[in-house]
View 1 (tube, rainbow over the protein chains, first blue to last red):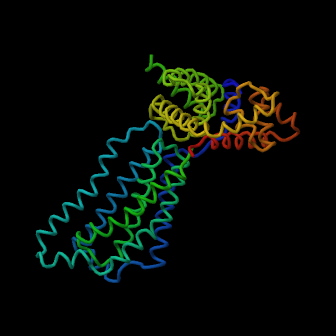
View 2: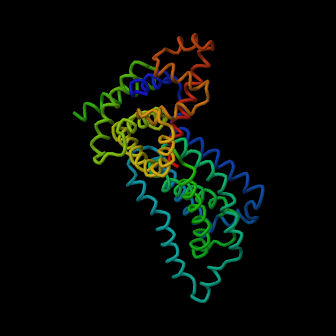
Length: 212
Length: 178
């Protein structure tokens, strides 16, 4: 087939229109929030003392970490799914959530006596943390990988990993409302492991599932 | 030069997305020239046919045109897709070398085998279901319009559009990274 002939076919197909990618991303993240919320409320749900907990710095700080992670990953993944879009700035924003966690850990180490460090780190339900963040995040991750297929990521493995970070940030935001362990020492350890699992899964999905 | 290209091409693509088919044809012809130049500069040591990459890039641009933001520059978007498809073509060729040993054996066994080199895209076209293949080749190779194709095949124009769209999407998917 000559290139000229191909152009004829493409031109004849011009009328067909797909939803603009950015709009589709906002829709996808909305659906992902609903799915993650449904899984969360159907399984563990928020902790009973959530109202008084909301007056404590440690409890609220968890949402700052997870929401900053989700927001920066959402901004980055939208750029990564468009060929030629500049990503450097949005990549730099990905450092925000880890830096906030590091800052909180340092403060915690100053405030809490050394004897209590281990107790705070181990917490009371790390196994629940490590299983429910991936469980809540797996549906959103599937949606985000589907969105990467709809888009055109020129770095599919990286984009898949960022999809995992976005799903992890979202899932961890819900999970944080359940978790009794509010110490940054706990969050920095177990949340990170759970989110890293989703990130790895996302990278694999990007490698094998995102083709265009 | 590039600034003029940029302004003109983004104007054409915006018009095409708004439904102007003439603008879309114009856009595709111009980017075919740009991408051909780009690919020929990049392929220095043969092995990959530049025109195959041009065609795969055009197809990818077509099926992914919803990823372009009308307020963003269009040239970086086009070149990023061309570059991605070029790398892909090299990667695929590396794999095909193993496959070709069998094909050579067949050629020896079958003296009258055709030696004309075919486009990758024609091969993908041959792999389509018959209904889609006849529509896509009627419009591309034979140069018929949607209406003429509908009359010739005895199906509705809507059916022609659907088959064309699905056929092109299926060809594009075959060129996806594996």
